[in-house]
Amino acid sequence: MHIERIPLDKEIYLFEVDNVLFAKSDYDLQVYYLFANFMEFTTGAIPARDLVGFMKKVYENQGPKFVFDRLKEMFGVEEKYKENLLRLHVNAQLPLKLILFKEVEELIVRLFTQNKQVAILTKGNPVEQLNKMKHIDWGEANQFKNLLKVYFVDELKFRNFEPIDYLAEDYGVKPQDLYWIQAD
Image (cartoon, rainbow, N blue to C red):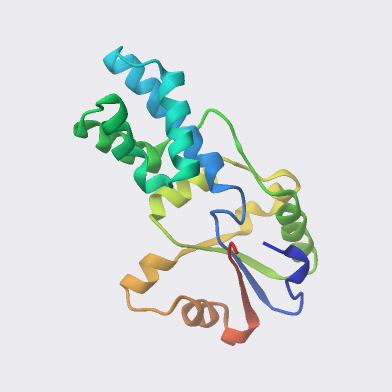
């Protein structure tokens, strides 16, 4: 993401959550840490450090959608534990805060001090996305976080709304007055 390329002449700025506010991997890897500790505690068979190290390797080399299947193959983790991992992804109580990217933190503060409207427009499971936002360390932008409206792309599309058109109408502006900041 290139913050310096963001035009500053718009009325409304929309931020995606994953890989825009913070690195999505920071959330996912903490979920894997929690899951690995759960598995060690529940089964006693596999040390958490071995599981989390393996999960991280698969995540980085093959992607998140392969993590559980590779756990089954490598460690014989039973399918019944997949639900636990999925539930953790949605509702995890993270041990560490998610750190807002510094340039995004500065941009949010700058936009609010220039009387711009700022909101979150995010894809994915709304409960999971809200959970992620709950764990963010907003830094200097903390003073503005309660002013952020949150919109969910999937929810709007399910209700047959085009997200940008819906937000433009909600804010009383034209769609071209909005700028959605998403990961590259």
